Image (cartoon, rainbow, N blue to C red; front, side, top):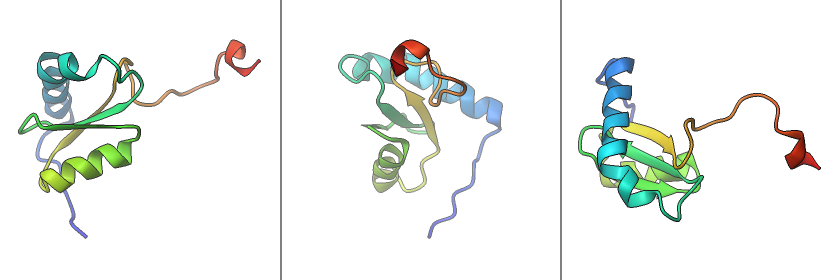
Length: 91
């Protein structure tokens, strides 16, 4: 099993990931993929779209074994949601 280590600070990682997503990836993936996950290599700009985090990152690592993946849920501000769900959705 390969042990991967981050090569950037958390701030630099987030800055690069957000910048690449907004400038390069978002225009290519947003339409028709709302709610899906995109894994982006912050060094190459390569990305993979899938229904889940594990699938997207595995595909990215298959193509780029040394990738530094930044994860985004397409159309959302966060990958995961914390807290209670809206009662409207439960009824």
